[in-house]
Length: 142
Image (cartoon, rainbow, N blue to C red; front, top):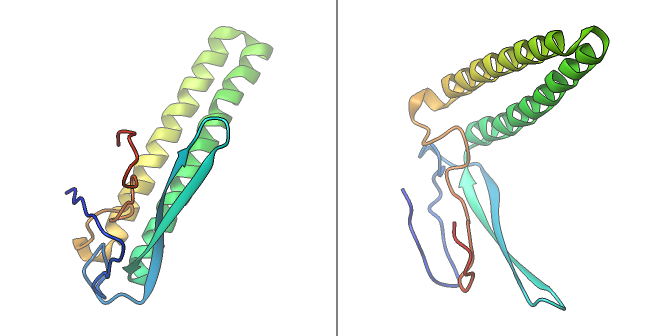
């Protein structure tokens, strides 16, 4: 669901934005905009959104899984190139593709684990429940 708001001061309820439970922590979301072409002025705004520690944990774990996916994909391609140079391009392509498939399967498994760890299915998402995609006056599209 997308909600557009306008104003200078927002007060969030003291409930977790993800699962609706009692919030015991906060997670910052921010947006920035730049103005000017020769001298660039960048402005950044931040909201502190209430979350429970369990939901912050699965959001942080998702960030780690995304980093793991990028690293394993890079190493899969590197492995394919390495084998391709030593044994031939066919074997390099096969090894690289097999490593990428294994990476995708591992990533899928880790996402399934994260969804299972969410607060008994009451979480809105395994990712951040609240985003600050753009600021007023920003003409870029979300």
